[in-house]
Image (cartoon, rainbow, N blue to C red; front, side):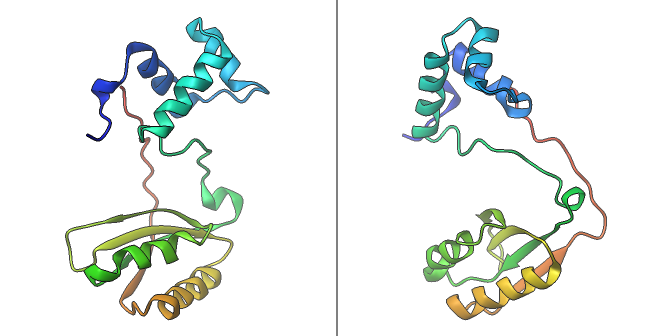
Length: 155
């Protein structure tokens, strides 16, 4: 059975709620979290590691606004034959500028975001993905206006 919110206790929920948008920028962030929740640093690390192991936490990392750092970003959509989806996703995921990808029930069934120093680099990478996978229907959909919402989920 996949992990669900029911597998979390109140302490796990408090950790998740605290680190989504307010991860401490301190030399020992798990110690800081532990102090806030009256837990040891080791207990926080153990719980975070467990939530990562069972798939509740996918990754812990910073979110940066690409344009503020001089980068460009785009949303891409691809028409991928069902039997090639795994191979295509693996090829796409090899690029460090791909932040995530997901399947959709649509003729364009694999979507992913790409961040790079230039549009030329993104276009070159998309061309290489086409060459590596044989998937030729890939749309490059750069934003014309940026709408940024905060994706935070109260657990």
